[in-house]
Image (tube, rainbow, N blue to C red; front, side, top):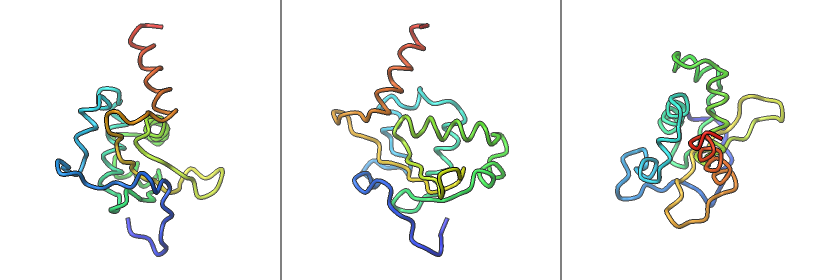
Length: 135
């Protein structure tokens, strides 16, 4: 969504650059094993943010507007999905103000195999492993 002012790039070292096999959504979402970890709300929000983002992955849609665009998900589901996508290192989010539910999103480049995982991704993978083991 275009804005009157330039949005700040939240993670300059993670700007999306379409790789050769890019089909708008990077195939590494599937090949890296992230896709099976996602709930339907998370997939829906991720897809929405990818489609809404500019070339740097930035957008600033409000949760209530996203909810209107995607009526199958309520605001609390979208809020939870946003938190999980951040924990999985797929998006960055910075609120306009500390207590504001809305702000700037950045769809992050999916890390290549062999790159060290972020602390958020390590935590998410650990939690998934525990869930799969029934702990």
